[in-house]
Length: 168
Image 1 (cartoon, one colour):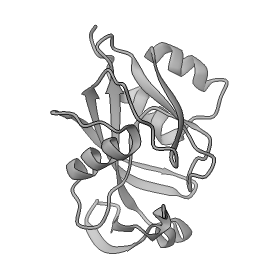
Image 2 (cartoon, rainbow, N blue to C red):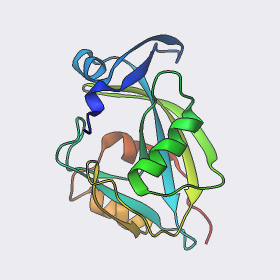
Image 3 (cartoon, rainbow, N blue to C red):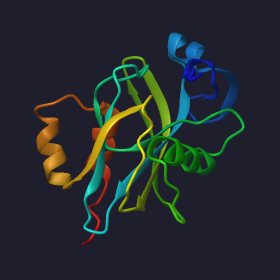
Image 4 (tube, one colour):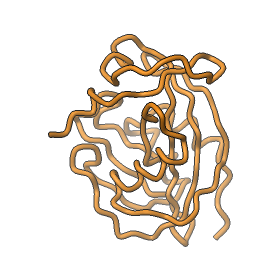
């Protein structure tokens, strides 16, 4: 049975140094700093895959998200986490990720060191029903316009503001 709260995640300090490993449930309850990977999936036309989070997500339910990805598990690298998350959420694998940057993000109960990657994949995707309600490719400018009208993950929009557009 699908139970993300039981996952054991890596907890870090403000300098991104590993401290301990705890369950995802404890991490969320205590607002602990953790690691996450973010994978921006572009198609050959430079459009970004936008996904709608399910209403059962433990953070930002029903929000639009600009990245596949998720919490880095204990003993897992950012890169391994990115491969796992892309496979779980979108049902695909890619030969190469581009590491864009690392960043610390904090808002409300979300305190996270993120490693941001990008990749090229044109689909088709098999969406993980527990986490992704819908998804489609969209021009980045249209995503910013949509974010003015609908709820997006704040860390995702923060990341997208820092990403240079991919040349078509």
